[in-house]
Length: 465
Image (cartoon, rainbow, N blue to C red; front, top):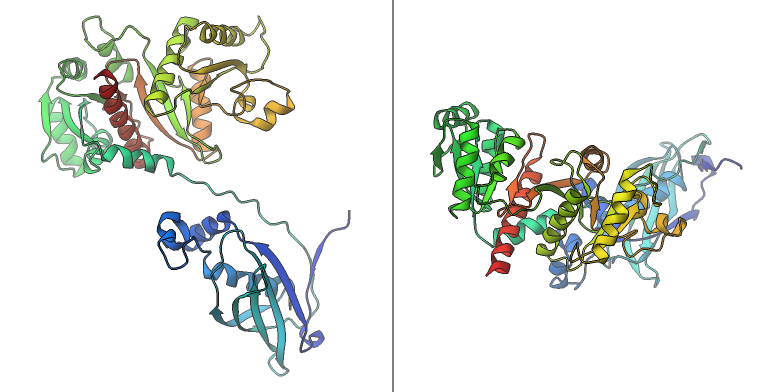
């Protein structure tokens, strides 16, 4: 295969009237990428609701995106590689909408022999032949011929993280949720509570050693004004007291502070806690994965180390109940394994098959459950079709039920650190939502976890009414 080259037209070869063009279809991704690079997030370009009320009645492409096509012609076609852009006059005649086919054309108007400058007419037209941009460019043309390997365009994907923004918007309208923050004796734990309060999501009640909490706030320069503190001598006592407050209805959620998760959950599942439902406590990550078309829930990646089949049934039902509270009427659950066939040597496949049958027999309710499914088959239609897997879940999973904590933790962190996902987490299975925040969580993730707890608490109250 011959290597494609970019070739230029040196100054001496240019003639008045020479021209070159390129054509590009304007897309919504072009708008998003241009906004990301330039910082121009004018709602006329980004927000269909705003644009519908604007002069043109629809989203329009950034004017300088169109002008950039002129630069592309000058740098790659005429004069081509080696050209220096000196100046540009522009006049915008018509708006460009997503889906328009834009042809950019440059034509040589004159040359300055002594300085090597070239004046070119520049214009862009749409698919109807209407002029959308006109002007003149001045360039310094190369003196020597250049032929250089043509590099492929970079493969760029737009990563959107707007699902949690919607979550936050919904939660703010519900009012602040009374929340016991358990043993918040570190700056990170206090910040998480204060951030959620500032956003109107939570009304924190700090439960723990008062002197330690105040010292941590003072050291971090944080103000605790307006916050109540329930004094408890140590972390065990703080966990027990917070659970008691939740059982009494004084708070409607729990947030982990600077104590171990096991310590908090032990108080929750104690026989006399008043919060234990009889169902296994499990953790769920609600993930905003930019490359996936909908929210994705991964469970359990934080609590149950080696769950039994009975535990997995509860983990599965907890996740289903959460998504139903979030408005997903019939979630699709993919029970993950390394392969799609049942293999007695691989216990995860046996559990997956059993869970599928349990769902069919009504032992798991409110969802479509299928497994075993490998990860690619669970989230990729193309992969499922290639493997000829007939499944109501394959390729469109809402919930990924993992074999054990190690697999779930690795999967969740790979999605976060390699796929750019955000992950809001809750512990499920108790009578109130439990936020298990981490020092590594971004502000966005901490707020999303608080928003998720707020929505779950509100919708659970409505369903119990």
